[in-house]
Structures are given as structure tokens and as C-alpha cells.
Image (cartoon, rainbow, N blue to C red; front, side):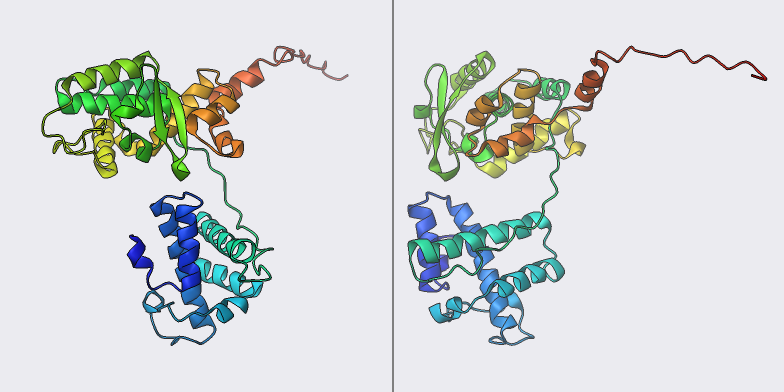
Length: 333
């Protein structure tokens, strides 16, 4: 969604979106998610407060008429009514509703603490819906080796595909980070990648990564390249797209017999983090820096333990071999 597509938003909402883009450094995709959440919130309120026809489809309601006075009259009860709507009518799960709460809190915090258009934050006490924490899906070490061996390097495209999968599994980078790598970002043993919020971090390349990059660069096209600084190119010699990378990973997973397990490029990031923690003994603080997490609490989801580790932990108890012989009491005693 381009900046021009925010034109149906009231001035104060558009200013907030620009603030996220220019001051906070949020990506256009992230800002679009904020916009969609807040637009839905305002559309709901217009209908909820009988300022829009009850039978009008909510996605057709325009929010350009919402005034600052309207926003000043929003209450915490309105926010809870909206969350109830997202649960009962929009069928949003807890994670989606939690994201909407985050959008509301950010918007009203901006309106009170940054733009000072509001004196009081109506959602100050708005609670986040409880989200069930689930363990991230990841490939085992054996499956990771199978995935790498399934890619036969024989030309430009296969060398590229192998290199991308190698970086995913060894560096734990995000899809957008991999797609955005430039030749100028690389040094002999390090790679500078741009993560969320345009934050840069340095990733150290191990032997496998350096070898895969060297093999790929030896066959990477030079003539007729549209984006000369892009590391990974499509068959049309332009920077490869995120969707194309997803297709390549899907094909490799299928070749390795792993296509039915719900894996994806992001699951390869989970895999890299899990393998580093479980098999490499990487400290969680170091893992946080590798993954580019802002908060260590985010990294902690990767410190899950396998069932084998749980079993071994119990077996390693110093009392694990202590047994009591049970002698049968004599008859008639």
C-alpha cells in the first residue's frame, strides 16, 4: 500500500502513519498493518455509534469524516466493544486481536504523548488478549541435512537456491533480510543485513556460508543485470522477490520429502535458531544478537527443549537408579 492510499484517513491518523514511517523507521508493510487495524476500529465505531447505516458492509464505510472531537469521546468501553466485535463477528484469533490492541495503544500513545491532541489516553488500561504460546516449528538436524543435500548445484539457479537455503539455515535471517542483501553488504567473513525498523546488524559467515556464496558468485550473471548490487537475482536478472524465494524453498522441501510438514522460509529461521541453541550451545544473549531481536523475551521462544532433552534430563538425575526391592509378604502373616 502506497502513501497515497492513506488519503481516506483523517489528518491526525495520516500524521501518525507518517510518524511511524519517518521517525520510528517502521517498514511500509508494518505501517500498512497499523492502518488496516485502525481503519477497522474507526469503521466499527461509526456503525456502533449509529453514525453509519447498520446494514452497510463495514468494509465500505469511509473514515475520512472522523473528527478530532469524535476521537476525544472514545472510551475504554468502546475499545472493548471493538475487541468483542473482532472476536464474535470478524472471527479474529487471539494473536490477531492482540495485534489490534497494540495498534490502538500505539495510536493513542502518539495522540497523547507526541502530538498532544488528546489530554487523556482512553486505552491506557486496555489489556492484551491472552495468546497461547506454542513452540515454533523447525526442522531437525537430520531434516536440515536432507534439505541441503536435495539441492544439486549444477548451474546459476541451483547455486543460488543452495546458497539461499544455506544462509537461512546457518544465519537465521528473515525472508526480507535475505532478499535485501547487496553485494556491497558483504565482506570476507561478515555480512551486514538490514532488519526490522531498518536496523542493521552484522552476521558472521561460517565456512558453509562462505563456500556457498563463493560458488554462487562464480556463476552469478554480470551482464544485463538490472539491479547490479543485488546479491540474489531472478532468472530475469533483477533482484529476486520474496515470493520467488518462498517457491524455491517449497520446491526444495518437496524434493527432500518434507513438503507436507508446513515448513517455510520463516521456519528455516526457527530451525537455525533452534540448532544453534540445542546443538551449538549458543548463549541466549548471543542468539538474540544473531537473530536481530530487540527484546530477549522474543528470543526465549527458541530455547524450547526437545522431548529427548527432557528424557535425558530426568535420566541424568542422581536418583534415577535408586530402586527399592519389594518383597512379598508371607502368606498368613
